Length: 289
Image 1 (cartoon, rainbow, N blue to C red):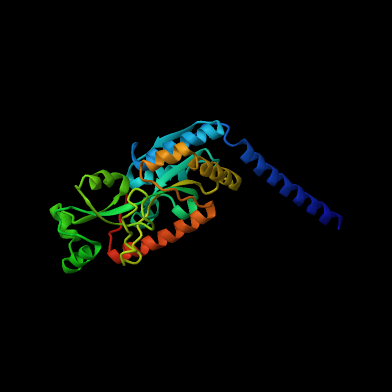
Image 2 (cartoon, rainbow, N blue to C red):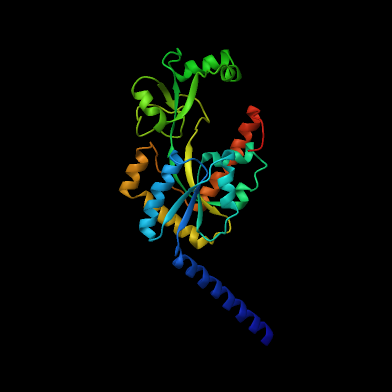
C-alpha cells in the first residue's frame, strides 16, 4: 500500500508539473522573433494578409513577426519547411485554400497535411466572381450552363488559348468589372460580396454545391503546445478585429471568417475529402510538384 501511495503521489506531482510547464510556455511565448512562412510570392493576397496580421501581432505581443516567402513546387516547399520546423510557436504558416488541394493532386509531398500541421484560424475569405467577356454572348449563369452542355469545351478552349468564363478573386477582377471589360454573372462563394452586394451567388441562382470560397489561413506544426496554439488564436482574432487591419484586408475584398482551432481542423479535413472526390470525378491527373 505504501508503494502504491508513493507512486500515486509521484503521478499527481508529475501532472501538476506538466500543467505548470504548459502554462509557463504560453506565458513566455513569444520571447524572440516569430517567422511566418508564406509559400507564395511577395505581393500576393496571401502574402499581404500575412504581413498585415503579422505587423499587428508584433504590436500586440512585443516581438517581431517576420514574413519569409518560400514559393515553389505548388507551395509544398514552404509548407514542408513548416511541417519540419521545431514545434515551439516560432515558425508559422500562412497559406491559401490550395492547402487542401495539394495533398490530392501531389500525393508525394514530403509531409502529411492532416498529420503534420494544425490550424490556428482562417484569416479571411476572398470571394470569387464568375466572370465572362462582354463579347462572349453569355448573359447569365443559365446561358453559361446551356453552352457548356451543348459544347463540352474545356480542353479545346485551353489548347486554343481561349476560355469562356473564369472564377476570379474579386479583388483582382473588380476594376475590370467596374470599367466594363468583364461581366460578372454571380459570386461563386458561400455569400454575397460586400463590394458587389447586388450580385447573387451561384447557389441563389439554382446551382447547388457551387461554393468556391478561396480562403487564407494560419497554421503551425502539429506538435506545437496547445496553450501556444490557443494564445496565438486569441491574439490573431484580436488582430483581425483591429480597425486598421480590417481596412487593409477590406481593400483586398477579403471578408473575415475566424474559427476555433479544432473547428478549423475539422473544416480542413472535410475540404480535403471533398476535393478528393472532385479530382476523381473530373479525372484531374495526379503528379509531383
